[in-house]
Length: 90
Image 1 (cartoon, rainbow, N blue to C red):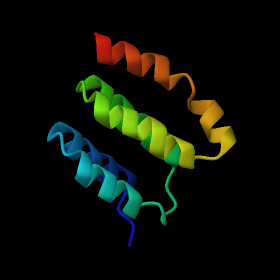
Image 2 (cartoon, one colour):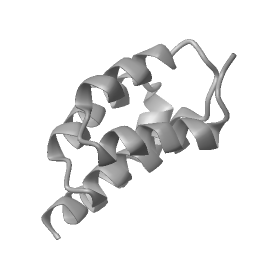
Image 3 (spheres, rainbow, N blue to C red):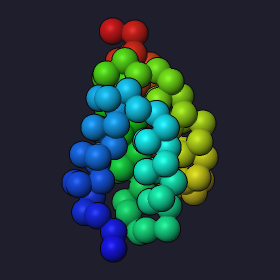
């Protein structure tokens, strides 16, 4: 059974707060079979990684998870990357 969107985001944020990239990766890949609002989930988790200065996690999300979104979703999310870079350098 799939977790609620809120619970899923909270779990991802906990892994980011704990700097646990391996668990974030494992958990994220286990979610791929469920129907979530992936652009919303990606945006929340990616920006949290940037806000917490976890560049390795933000990079992994950008290179691995972003590529799994369909092209329309990728276009809709493009603006999140400049803001994420701003948060990482702030």
